[in-house]
Amino acid sequence: MTTSSSLSRYKEIAERHGVDFDSVTPSSFEERLALLEECLQRTDVPYPIAPQYANAYLAKARQGIPFDVGSLCEQSVDLGVYANQQRYDRYTLEEHLSWACLIAEQQRTKHRFACREYLAGEELFAIGGTTIPDFYLLNARIYQQTEWQLATVSMIIPAELFFTCHSQRFFPVTTFMRALEQDYLQEPDIGHDVAGHVATFTIPTVAHVMRNHGIARNWIYEERDNLLAQTSDPLKQQAIRNLSDELLLYAERIYWFTVEFGLVAQGREVRAYGAGILSSPGETQFSVLSPRPTRIMINPACDRDLLRLATTDYLISEFQKTYFVIESFELLESLTPERIVATAKLAAKLPHFSWRDIAPGDRILQVGESAVSTNEKYLRLMCDQLCDDCLTRTAIRNLRLLQHGLDPSLDLNSLWSGVIAPVPVGIIEWFKSIDIEQRYNIPLRPLSY
Image 1 (cartoon, rainbow, N blue to C red):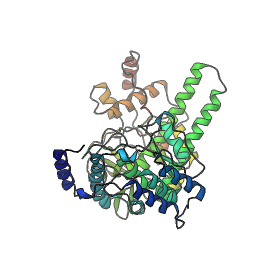
Image 2 (cartoon, one colour):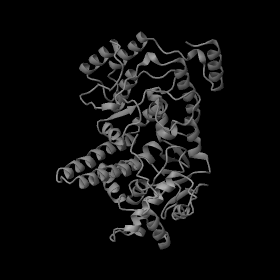
Image 3 (cartoon, rainbow, N blue to C red):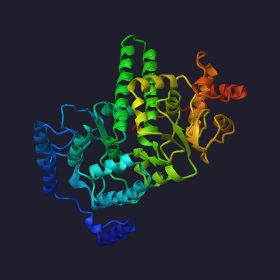
Image 4 (cartoon, rainbow, N blue to C red):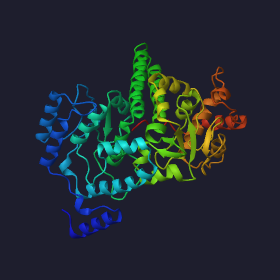
């Protein structure tokens, strides 16, 4: 029940964000059904819905069955223990208001800093409004324009499942809404999944990158299963599983720095297209204007630049320290499953960069205030002065790799189109002596999305 004091507070919040409080009223069940029926009958769309699927879909909605996984074609996806449903009528006034306020703030920053293609996608799907979207209607509109569908999940899901969904053109979406006036969220909510991602589906090359990551995931785990079938040794089997998870991690970094946190050059300006950026009004402006992060121009069709993405670690707990800028969306066409997998396999053999590092060969648009040289993370580790977990994790991983020796066939300077500063031998020997004590029990970052 909404009390008078709560109502007064809600109105103040709505006014602060430029939202008409009286409009924060969801449509009735009957009104939503009418809109859905009209939508399902459309034929003036790129991908009309076959009548047999449309009729069954509408029947589910009419019965009040909560939305779970889109069912507008023969494909589906098994979400297992992460399966969830959108029970639309259970959303509270506060949750709808949270959506309305977030959208209002997003729109102000998106129209200033988002790329043209993204804004066109938002207009196409009518992303906005003052109430949380009904997934039945939104899913139908997405399918008609892109052949993608939604699949509701209960929480952050493992990357393996996330990209499995992508391989079938399903996008996992959560059903909860962040707290009122909360700008940045570490875990995805409707404000990220819907208001951030949905418009990107209409940028064909971005949608291809998403699908290709799903196919790359399938190839990585098909190879894993083939290797597992060839040995009964538990230790070898675990090593095989670990490597496949590691390869997916490096593939996921390519996704992170493009689909989630990518920037694109348009004219003489830099604009955002990454859903992780655009779902946060604060990070949208930060990514384009702030002097604090580093911005690096990349060409995804260049093997060196793609490897740079795969070998760059990051954190999700705060705004990014480095953003990568593509010159045009057409360059993303080069991100085939073959290149994604091959780049991940090469990344597994190499020392990596932290999200603050400046690497040789980088085409730097701006050196951020938090930027460091490639060796600084090791010096900070020795002095117990690391400034974030990303530097710690990257330093430990690299030193463990270096103490065993790199593959002699790898020429780092050639790979990076520049001279990599060698890690002083003294640091490697120091680390070798203390790592025996198992002082640093830090695994690879857990895979989840």
